[in-house]
Image (tube, rainbow, N blue to C red; front, side, top):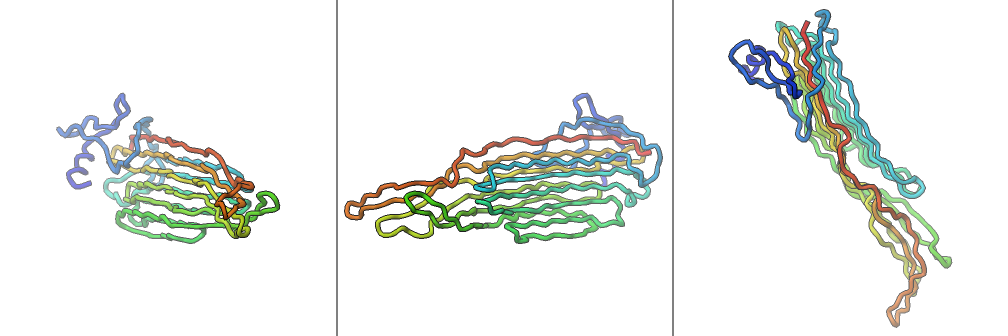
Length: 342
């Protein structure tokens, strides 16, 4: 906040009205209509509910007046390892410890804030395990000016590290990164089709996958938007032909995993004075996914070159399913608290 904004906040009492909206109450001057709003996260709605007025009981700087520690997680998993399996796992954590505040020594507050997101995209092909994406990011902001704020991230695509971040800062800082990478993971396969004819080739998954994030650390706020972005397809490639009068082929199209799982939120202090501390947080987790949708197959034909005609000897399905296709919201909410700074 700039100097004018800080002055207004310091002279304002806050409360929640009947609709659950945090707003100014009995300002100490003729300044009215001030509403606490800081670092609103795009795409996140908060009902601003569950206002709690809490008395601290003592003025020990390290005693928590309020602790927020919540995690939202979801694992989508479909198929079986012996043929095709695909899964996406995401979790999002928000943490805050609110301690007494001394206006004469604002840099010595023991309050702290942390947001983190982790994601994994995994699967299996005919008994072969696939680790397609794993990693996460954590942003930590202690109010104590003698402590470092930190940003940590580790992202692996197909087992290869594409990002490693471990940074400490004393001033506020924002972070933004897109980490999509192209991958192609395949395995040899031989399966009988018919009439003593076997298909030999390879089966695999290819496309783009990554974990994107955007967030920031401040002495009284930590905010984060993140989530995996996935566009992976299954495929089969033929190996050898069966001679001049016959051929092996493959057909179909399979969406292995396509879509995204966005998470976003923040935890922080909107205002703190000698008498009260106003705390707010919100969170959101959504999804838009298509998993294991389509068909992949191989075939064997016998052909008569003179008349340019072929006869289908047989087919084999590697995979066929309408798949999982859905979008929606896993979690969406938030709360405000007005704490007595005692």
